[in-house]
Length: 424
Image (cartoon, rainbow, N blue to C red):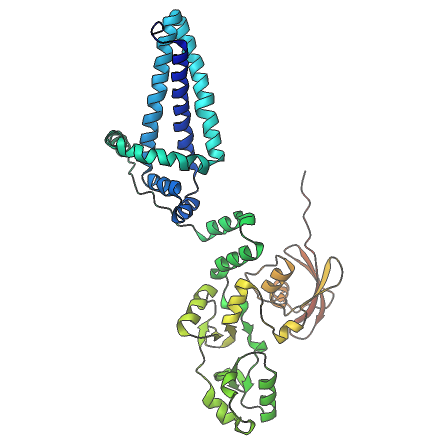
């Protein structure tokens, strides 16, 4: 062969084989490294290379069979070519040396380098390769099919069954990771909203409801002037109507129903005819479930009850939406500052403040798996109503009781979280 084939022809043919080997090796890594969700997105946008790659990856056994068939074919042919050419030139020593040199060349230029490039830039390599593999698979299908049949038979003997290669559904935590990893592709605001939506299943109506003692409504046992004042001062469009206490609720009044009434027509009897039947939901209902229930029932407000039927608070559609997008309406309670900065590292906190709201506004990490308010958390930990000046540490945050009354903590001083020293 050394006498029949010129050196230039031999080198050219060998380079061609090495390029083909590099193509097969690199494209295999690129196709297997593709992000399947990004691939599906590009395919749905009409990217031709992405559509072909997605079709090929639906049956990875056939794709791998085709790639290995081509890769082994060119590698074996290159090895045979070098062996014959070297033997013609220098006998067995030259053939042995040629095999060693070819192995190193293939390892560096046809395996490591192209596979590294493909792993770093999978789409740039995989999409053009898919344009080649798709028609090539059609041409060589009988041979690839027979090869896969033999391979699957061997796997069957070891208890391995082939299955479809559909995308597996992401869990909520996996989806959270995807959103976090999106980085600058999604703005901080939208990323926060997406994460809040994912957290709706972990948050219940108890976490966002207006508690029993803070419910503003119309007491039919009050005098007319007081009722008129509540209606005129209300910042809400719906108010519960009750007798004596919220536990004796009559219904929900939409203030829009009063628009066409003259002042003299605004009587307690009239109010009772305008109310709608109250909607009750059990405590502990996840916000994701309650949001769907509000939509199905065409309701915007619900009374939260415990297992005994006692009213614990009120939750509204607005409360759930604010869990996703943040506060977007004006509430009279918002005018009262729950947290007042006392210095760079300490804050005076109204102990009736919701812990989740404190965590969100101050970027704290107080525990939320128990009591809903700072007062409740402190009383639960100390198992008593503490005296002013009492200090405790909660999850790394130093807390000092400032003011209390007979049955609750009114205000407390909260310091910045203490950072534990790192052991060297």
